[in-house]
Picture 1 (cartoon, rainbow, N blue to C red):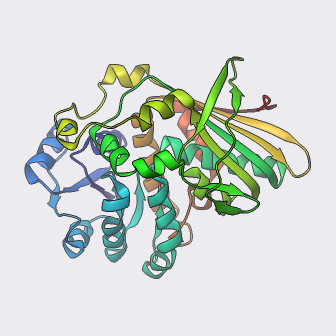
Picture 2: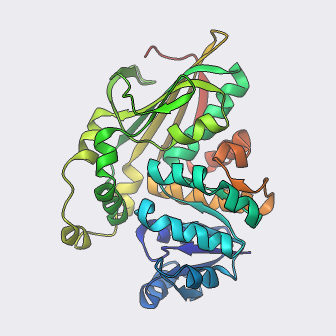
Length: 347
């Protein structure tokens, strides 16, 4: 089965290509530069099956996707570049997923493109990333276990690692959202109100200060998980690093594509979901892994594979609407991503 990768010559795109090759799938490389696409195919030890198309020409994009059954979009900033890719995928009759962590883009896909995806008869699942898909699926597991949730508090802690050039460009274009903190979910509705800063206890007993950040699971989880209040935060040190003044565009272009394999292997992430059910029951899900970029390549490819193998109802869906949460999370243990349910620590 052919899977088109848009932005295949970028850093995240290259990791997605490697994961598709590992799984024996045939990727179709799509982007703006034939030379860069051929080089990406060479690095991934793949046939040079390339199609040149730009987001400025949706008809050309749709034509480039015509030989594929699914599209994985790896080209950010997604709020600017993502809409034409999704529209072209729908025009080509392809299922769609992406590696966006941008809250604004994810909300646009789910709010604005559901009807178009239904008419096209395909499924679009944005944000098939470690940072959104994992909490989205885990939240559904919690509600299945506890019943409707009164509150859900999600904490992201990431230790080590550096950003790719594509991530830095997304940070530059999304800086207003980062500094405002994005939307929250209160009393069953999205709001601009900021959550109170909190100190969260990690599984090892260490306390971490948190800060607001525009995390995409805030706009995905309430669509499939019954929850009245949802807060998602990052550790304060991570927010400080990400909200600092980004380098100018010309400086970004001169940087390495992204972290080297050693830096990726040394990186660790922990995502905590602390839930209080309307029944009064409490539980915590702890998600642990390493290498956010590598994990995102795995989650994006696994999402595309599952959409092709057992297509859900068409539409723009969240991960927990389109996929089986328990089965998906269990499949990630082979890639070093573990999840466990326990009694919660105080927040």
